[in-house]
Length: 105
Image 1 (cartoon, rainbow, N blue to C red):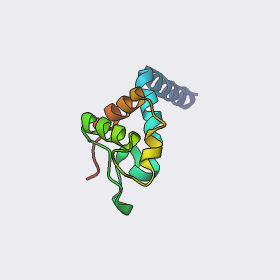
Image 2 (cartoon, helix red, strand yellow):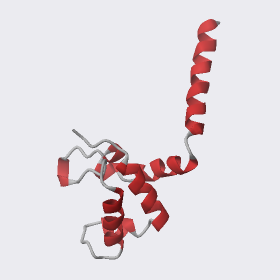
Image 3 (spheres, rainbow, N blue to C red):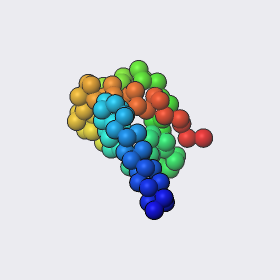
Image 4 (tube, rainbow, N blue to C red):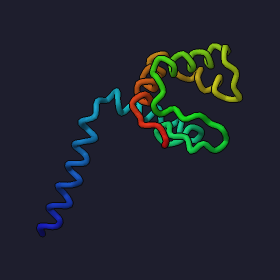
């Protein structure tokens, strides 16, 4: 009986912790998941295929580069198309999210 109560309390604590995250942070993490296929989980690229890591990038640099992709000022195979799908607010949220991640070591 006690084990069931302890497990139930643990799951409740996890749920409350997730709910405590600001909606904006959850949205940014959700958006960042779209980048994982090429740039690695949380922006930590494994280095394979020459894809740069996004974790730890300056938020200002990230925003500048995403806007350059979107405006066609920076050439890419696919990023110019992907960047067009994000609003300015979403790009800023992504920049903030990735700037707070620890880079791959």
